[in-house]
Length: 220
Image 1 (tube, rainbow, N blue to C red):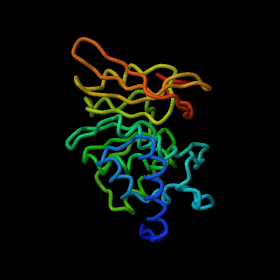
Image 2: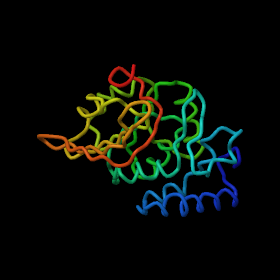
Image 3: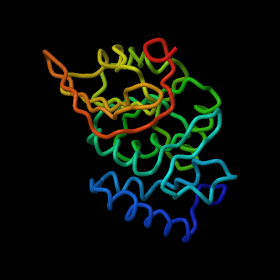
């Protein structure tokens, strides 16, 4: 990949192979999500020393001891979120910016929070390199959400909490959905929670393993 964000034929071929063998083969078939993943050069979002591993079937360590999720997990979570054009979406855990780049292909109303300033700044730079200018960034405690911009139609968390943070549920619109990993440091489950006017409905999805969700309403 060039410094201007361009990508080589070899990388495009690796991306298509990743989609076919790691994502579609495991049952993720949402055409919008697959198209978004094909458009975003994953190699831009991993450290240069492991760039040749960008399309492998695993998570990779990035700066600040954080991770970029396995491609399948990104696709699965995005599909489970069910983003539609016009949805206002909040992402918790900007990290490398890869998930944000995928979401930006699906909605023009994306807000993302990262507690580590250097990660947020680097992610913003990567997305600008790709011509993605309409994402709003915040450095802060993601477990508290972004109250002045609430409500959100969709919320996605890319770190695991011991329970769903109440501020995020409070900031979800009626009819909205949150996708979040919940559990302890060893055993977690990806949950999909839909908010109704009188209750929330929780649906377990798949086992997973994420870094800890650090925050006032999560792990401290």
